[in-house]
Image 1: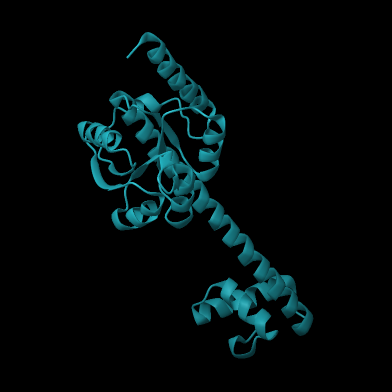
Image 2: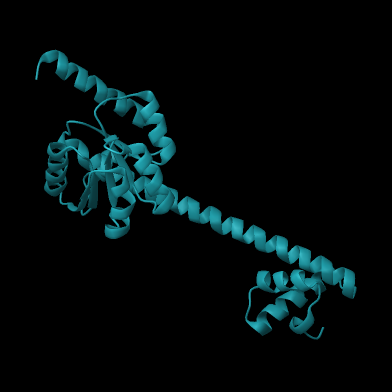
Length: 234
């Protein structure tokens, strides 16, 4: 490779690295993560056979396993569903679309860590990839020593994001349950002349007696606007 080409290649890698330092998946400990025992199950979607072979070789050298290969956007979701990989490597350019569209489909159907394989550093591609849920980048032709940190950071960041998502879902569920119970208390207070604590205890006791959640009891009350068969003695 001539000096100018090598300089351009290194410049592209610098741009990716600099971007990643400010991207949401960056963590200062990424090099330490690369020291862990690597047992990733990797899916590769790339229509360029030499590139796919080089990536597969690097994955194997780092202790990982390639569980599947694809070459088209339409392969991505199908193969993720079939193999349930730990991480997916997607090439930007694919015959029936691009890796960003493939990433978007995967993240919609079966979310998992995704690293994009790219031969250039177009800001629009980078921004679109991040929006689609991509958590890492590798520049073609692949340098094997760059693989482990990229995969480890993507997997680690995905786990963090999943934990936050689940926490947010739980908070949302609790908020919705509280709203239901508050509305049900209001009905009992109006129709039965109960105080707020009495209305709460009525719903709580009914939930215990029927082995339902308070939200389920509240929902039933709201639907019928009466305790009906769910009512209990005060």
